[in-house]
Length: 430
Ligand code: FAD
Image 1 (cartoon, rainbow, N blue to C red):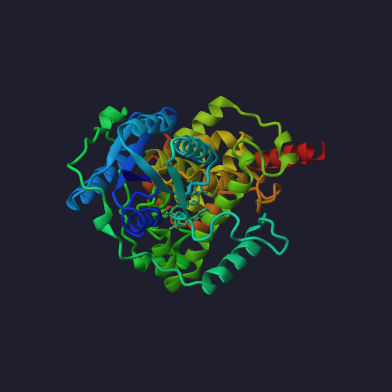
Image 2 (spheres, rainbow, N blue to C red; image 1 turned 120 degrees about the vertical axis):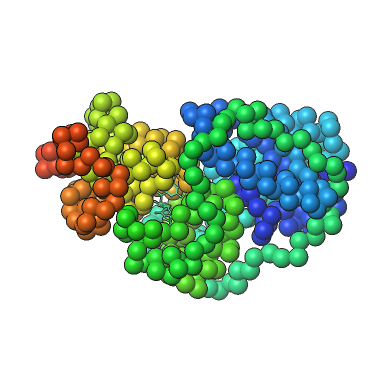
């Protein structure tokens, strides 16, 4: 008999809750990873860097497990189908895994859990990717918070009241012993290597220490760039939150935003394609495809917007300040549906996280929880003046700035600002 530990967005051995309990409570624990075709078939780019990153992590984890005398089952396919065939190959006692709160993941886990139960196998899930999962931070009437500030206050109180310690003393002797199992290549998964570099996983304590002072300036390397590692769980949120609590309250606050948006999505799965505030679903977006294309390519003639989009296209990363500016520009200046921008970010961002991306876009479009009020429209010029005064960031991404080659502004700022306010006002009053 074996017990499987199913890796998903927790690609590490360190402080991995579900893995810890699988080893603690069972003998013969065998890890498994599934390249999930339900997810992969939706990706547009064959050289998607995130798939390469996952493949590299799986390769590493598998070899670490092999050094301990075990291995990892690695399969490609739809999870339900894979489990059907695993149930024939192995005598499975239970499957352990860490909870995932996205709508697709919940549905998948429900189906797998039912299949296993029908075969007499248990399905155990654990909290791992969050400090406080949806439902753990509630208001006095037992409801989830729709606004960040009171949520973060209660989150912090809970955090201070409980000692968060990463797990240790993993019972590695309870791993299932086996010869190495096969590992499909990235090509067999249907992808190829990307040229995009993945930011390192090391937490740079100096950056976190000064985070509150440096975080808003895109020309400075003043943020941690750990997004992709939080997304795929190559870093433990408990380790990071402990460091943050010691070094910088503003940084910890950003980790709370992450959990706030995850909670909003878990309780309001409709936000995936609807405005959090339903009245905002009546905005008549212009959705001009040529303008959208200019935005995607970084050719709007607004340097700070174009620099951001070019950074995104070239590196899979964009600084948070600039994400806010480009998102505001798309939804307000161009009146293009926030869902278009959200989908483009989802395709390009290494750190793409459904909950934060949706939250960020709805914030910028004014349709979300703690939204930017619609009559406040970011002015790209004054944002540049405040956050990239010497044009260092802009010039890095737009070497042709100031020459004939650089496009003229796609729309006049004053005109666009008024048009956005009028359009929103009319839609909300109708
Ligand atoms: P740091 O500034 O070093 O912050 C550390 C971590 O805190 C981040 O990695 C992230 O996990 C979390 N965090 C920071 N800011 C936020 C925030 N505002 N909301 C939620 N979590 C936050 N973040 C994503 O992780 N994935 C996304 O797909 C995403 N899309 C966004 C789209 C828009 C339009 C906007 C305005 C913001 C988006 N963000 C997203 C939030 C934020 O921009 C990124 O988390 C951050 O820029 C990532 O860089 P970093 O790792 O250096 O973050």
